[in-house]
Image 1 (tube, rainbow, N blue to C red):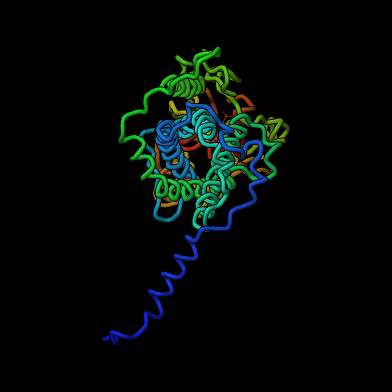
Image 2: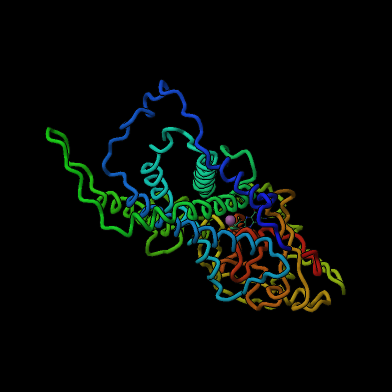
Length: 419
Ligand SMILES: Nc1nc2c(c(=O)[nH]1)N[C@H]1C(S)=C(S)[C@@H](COP(=O)(O)O)O[C@H]1N2
Ligand SMILES: [Mo]
């Protein structure tokens, strides 16, 4: 289409230009009488704050958040697998590693986020609060990022401390969706701040500020602050890794679980009493029901013990970041599946607990894991019958599987059950 040279700019481009002008137009100045307290000029004199410090902390925090987000997303996919996703059964310790890294990077973010927020919080009192609508929107996106980051870190710490009272919502769902919110807000933030970061890190560090004469302690240097922050992040990581890595267990002073502490030297998340299954689990008339396309079995403990027994050395790897390896003995799931006339490599198994209610009373085993020789209906732990808190009379233990899916106190197996 040929436009007449004298025709006025109409439609699309002119409209966009008008929109941009409106968006970037200076807003009226707020009354100067409001400039008191933290809003007055020079309210935050610390010479430690600089674009360079904030940039360095931001990069460290960005890396920690990215690793934490990706490992968290992985954990979500493993627990709620969409059709395109499959999680391998080997190496048996992979989930232990990825979830340990998720919790460790989340905890390392606590001091990083604290110091980062300290380095920028004077900007809360920026004057004027909004120069333009674009500036206001940018500040709004930072508010979303800060709120989401705090929600994730505080919620995560409350969850691994098993202190659910301050969270009147289901933690896992909230943590998952706010994780996406934080990731999106972080991308916007990086996009907006990238020029500032490259500028601040591209030029040499500013010379140390000249200290005004007079008494007063020598201030902390930027390097000193960064070292202290890194040391705090490292210390938190080491002291929580101790809840998984046996040689570090003596250091696990802030971790809620320790390897080797618990019945049969394995930690417990939910006890039999807590799940309300103690009586049913200890009932001598216990039977494991197995329903399949070719038959139904009702097996008492003697019958289960009479089947071929296998031993596997597999970890319990809790989503809360602790994990413990143990030696389990019992019946292969695939043997039971074969007994009720199904092909283990082609069928899912719904594993249901004697526990009447609760989110983790049931789990589904995918075909690949059903056929795996290491997937056991365990009857023993470390050679002894399972402690009731570990799932006596029978519990599921499968390789490279999150702890929440290692169902305890099994009452029924439905072969070919819903995925
Ligand atoms: N029936 C049932 N099984 C369950 C749970 C539960 O609450 N109910 N908790 C799960 C969780 S969260 C973990 S981490 C493991 C822990 O197993 P352990 O207590 O033997 O260490 O059990 C899993 N099996
Ligand atoms: Mo767990």
